[in-house]
Image (cartoon, protein in one colour):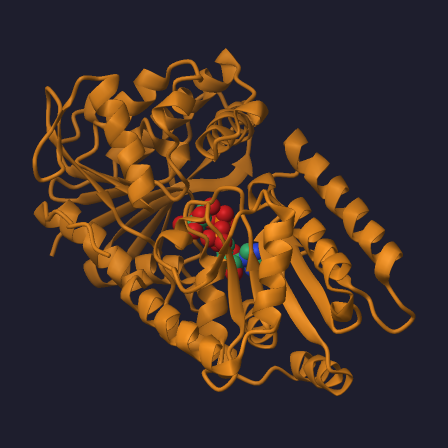
Length: 463
Ligand code: ADQ
């Protein structure tokens, strides 16, 4: 079996994988079986003139290789090109793109640093798997250094239509970089189609009948590999009793109250302000819902140095205060807004104790919260998933109540429908959704991508 080399912006903590999510666990297991390397930034910013050697740690059969960045790299590559250009651009938010030439230079410089650090650890037979938008030029950099190994890329976030992509300078270069990989994987068919349309219209590439892209140098497999969760381990976690959540749930049961739950990184792509407005609209449109339902929104802070993230935090705090001010009673708080992270075990128990999972991103690569919510439900009395049509997950999770995250009234109506849905319909939907998340679980994602990378297998479009 060939060794696997995984590269991502940050490295998962390989000593703590038992508590981590399905993605990190799956990749780490695969690395352990095959032996391999996981390389990424160590999260530190240091002052240096000469690039330091990567820091190597051996954890069982896996080598962890990390490099530090400079303050300038962090500002231009991470906060700049990755999170102020590519992140908004790929989420169709041209209004939030802040393009600067220095950001592009920083992005190229850091990708070159990754390549320099990586080449010294590579063996001729390695399979290299690069993750996400931070590292699009990495295959090109590696090829320049003589790397002949098979290299795959998986994009965790959406890929925009050519009309949006073309608005950013150097868009052609970005896509040409993607075509230096042997395999390019996307979350959904929509993302894949966007790439295919671009390479055909802007680069004049030939699309082969089996779906591969022919360039002057190589034939690239471009495929759709929807990411999933480790369903069984999430089910097991949700079935574990959690004292604090149980006490809270009992109290709600006595009072006859239901709970709607939202769990997200605090990001403008997640549609949080309109989600809160939709909940307020539910209370307006259906006054009988007052005092009988509450919204718990857990939002983990991220990228707090980027302006757009400071704004969204302020907006949400103001909105939750406003809704509570308007509707709260001495013994009922309609919105519980938690600005922080909840441990995974508590999260699983909270999903299970909530009658509605409310997942309304304006645009999302996949959205694993939607899948976790379904995995956490009990078949005896399952909750209902209300899901944005713009989450990648909506391409497969048809039995959720699918909503338009820009339409507050539509979301309010569907919340009401979810809260009043009869048991047999909830069970039918739950059964079908469980089948789907099992079919597209973390192992399936990993195996199908690895089959393309290792054996050149082409994945056929499924239902
Ligand atoms: P994210 O944008 O981070 O991921 P998501 O897929 O929902 O979005 O994954 C978030 C993970 O973090 C989930 O496992 C969730 O449980 C956890 N999480 C989120 N908020 C939390 C909180 N407040 N407390 C505790 N845990 C929390 C990116 C893309 C997605 C894509 C994934 C995987 O943006 O579209 O699905 O990568 O490819």
